Image (tube, rainbow, N blue to C red):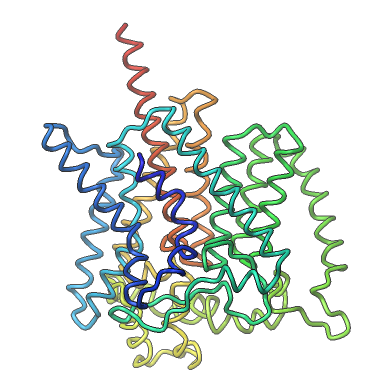
Amino acid sequence: MILLKFLIIYLPFEEFILKWMPVSDQVYLLLRQVPDLTVFCLMVALFISRISLGKGIPIIGSKVDIFLLFFVGWALFTLLLNPSADYFVGLANIKALLRYVFLIYIILMLNPSSLQIENLMTWFSFAIGIQILVGLSQYAGGIPIRDFLAARHVSEDIGGISKDFTGDRFEGVNDLMGTMGDTISFAYFLMVGVTVRFFLFSPKTFKFWGIVALIFLLVYLSGSRAVTLVSLMIISGFIIWKHGWRISIMWGGVFVTVIVVFWFSSTFVDISMNEVDRHSFWFIFNAEFMEGALNSRLGIIVYIVPKILFTVQNVIGFSPDKEFFAEYIAISQLMIPQILVVLLPKVLEDVYWVAIYVYYGLIGFILWVSFLIALFRKINKSLFLLSASSKGISIVAISLILASIPLNFLNQAFETRIFSFYLWLFCGIALSMARQALRVSVLVKLK
């Protein structure tokens, strides 16, 4: 449990900590793999320990493990089927997708008590609180604080894999990033914080809603439009779940009114020029945004997906090497804008559901979606085993699985370390709590 506590605290602060390490870029990139290596080594150590004690390896059940195992096998098989693909890059991309899925099995093997789970949530709340303070400091301090918090700029790579942080990408733009280097990671972390606050804390006080409003504001100020919209969906879903449709519609009307007023009074809108600042949230409603989107995310959906959806190659998959797929598109005779062909390696994973389909083909895509559906059903069915006070974490896990659907249409949420870690962490805790509740229920019946 100590290692889990360490990761819960360390991951949000990793980039800021490593920034000050006097090491080369390549060593820096290797140090960024420490959390992934820690999770993998912990899982292996627990497996060996259980086997040596004559205990079995815990499984999730409900075919979740089967779909996951088949997906991993098929993902590796796609590399063999496409020998022109870069094996190192392919394995790195498979690792990026699956790096923290093993947390589910780790938590099932650790079988944490209610007190230990509560302790983990305390550490998480502490990390959220610090990031809120850092975000406010960055907003108040402006560009100098942003530059102080910015992650290390890396000019080298390992096997063609590098890291480009977005927190200070635009000169003079103070999108909030906390200590995470990337604005999207900061937004994801706070989105998880909003979800946890809704389902693990009492929503009856002004303090509760004040903190929720503050977190949502910081998500908005991160400039991450996709996470802002999904956070709004989570808030709306909670209000509907808690208060029903009638009150929710009333609150929705108030919210829409506020948005409309803000829209017309926003300082981001230059009425005289009829333009919107491209770094503003409202830029997504501008015609220029749509034109640019056709050269990135929207262009992938409009121009590429219909042409490769049911080709023989894509039933099998192109392997998780986006350069290999980009070369295939470049030499094909498909009617695709040249600018999109050039930008494809950089923007493909911005529509990550499409990337999964491209990488692992129709077969791999079905296996991955089946894994998620089976996991969702397993956690959802376990809710009836839990008391009202214990259902919160399971609902958080369910909410994050549902949130991953729109997020992966607009970003690579499954590969983003912050979102991935907490998604699988909460899924693991939810399954562990359900298993404990089932054992108690069986013992009660036996008595």
